Amino acid sequence: MYLMAIMDWHSRRVLAWRVSNPLDTDFCIDALDEALACYGKPEIFNTDQGCQFTSQAFTEVLEAHDVRISMDGKGGTRTTFS
Image 1 (cartoon, rainbow, N blue to C red):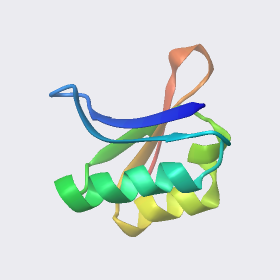
Image 2 (image 1 turned 120 degrees about the horizontal axis):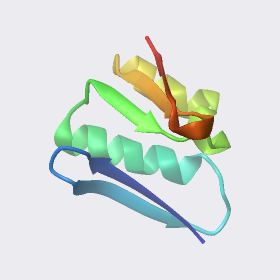
Image 3 (image 1 turned 60 degrees about the vertical axis):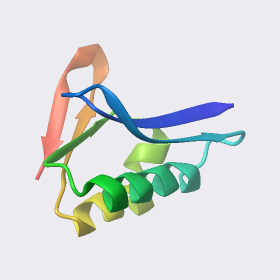
Image 4 (image 1 turned 135 degrees about the horizontal axis):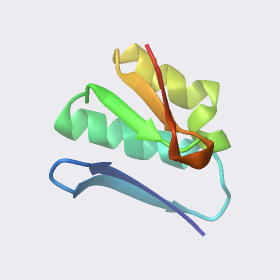
């Protein structure tokens, strides 16, 4: 089982979440769509570099909403894409 949760780092509130047996991108996009619809777009969206978050389908949703993408890299560094 895989849990995908979208949190607001400032308030530490969970904005949306999904659980899935297979690790795929669809359940992550569903949670992302819910968070965007309910809370609007964030300035920056931070994830790890898992395949579900680096997929074209997931990043296209963020880019379509003009959200900057930040991904934790090896050693805890972050890379921000504009």
